Length: 355
Image 1 (spheres, rainbow, N blue to C red):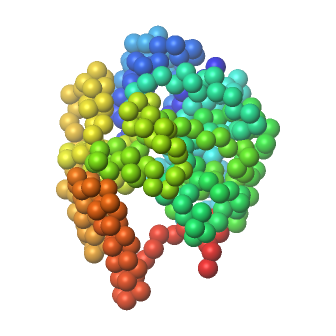
Image 2 (image 1 turned 90 degrees about the horizontal axis):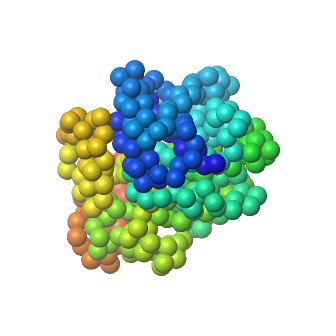
Image 3 (image 1 turned 180 degrees about the vertical axis):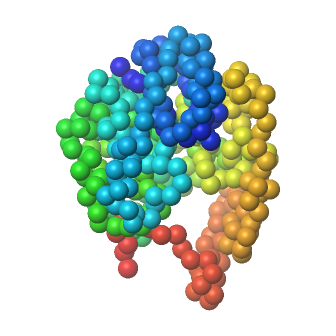
């Protein structure tokens, strides 16, 4: 059976609850009687709301404590730079240590999602020898193709971790936990801790690529530009891109894109209505939308002001080629500023830096 799992602290309880509601509403054939929540401090009132949603569909929530696992990893590697803030997302590389042994196939979904269709295809999918399946990050994969950095695993693809399908039986047989610890022992700074560990520790032969419709992230672009950005690196076929746009199964409102999250004011995603629909059906229907990120955290320096300007340009209805020209000019601008003044340093890379 395919089991569903979230990992959150209390801050994301509302979004995870709305995501679970959308999942259960669109997947009436979901077999298990339980949904797993790895608990990093969910308040009792929000637990009751999550329980209420599950009960509405004849299910119950099983709460699991991931803190003993991540606390032990932090104890072994105290100088690892990514250990800051909530550890809820960091449990993914060690998820086999938390999920019960009877679970063999597990669908992990980030809280900032809406499930708009059936995942029955994932329950029946032939995983072969793969231990995990996910969608490919266009941006990070093209960096690998250009040899901007390498992964310890030697992989040529880079898997996002927002939606992951685990074969936990094979995962445990491959002793992935020890692989993760081995990578942690090699380096002390990475940009994205959960994705970094998964992509550096798991060889490509044990990964399976999911269609983009199961982790649809490009809705923050204007519809004129969306297909162009999805196809620009030729990671996915034309048919897969059109299917993701027209019939997404899991809509992911990515962090970092401040205008793409519908629980903040000013969201410009053309898929925000799906979130509002399920919010209105949830126990949080009367809870307010948060202020815009720009109001909460105004830009502090030239880099942040420039990034805010760039995001605004990307989401404007320019023809795709003109939008692409803006990004090219931006890239040259950043390189010039960095070399001249050193005030906009490049992001740290994941894996082995190539000098």
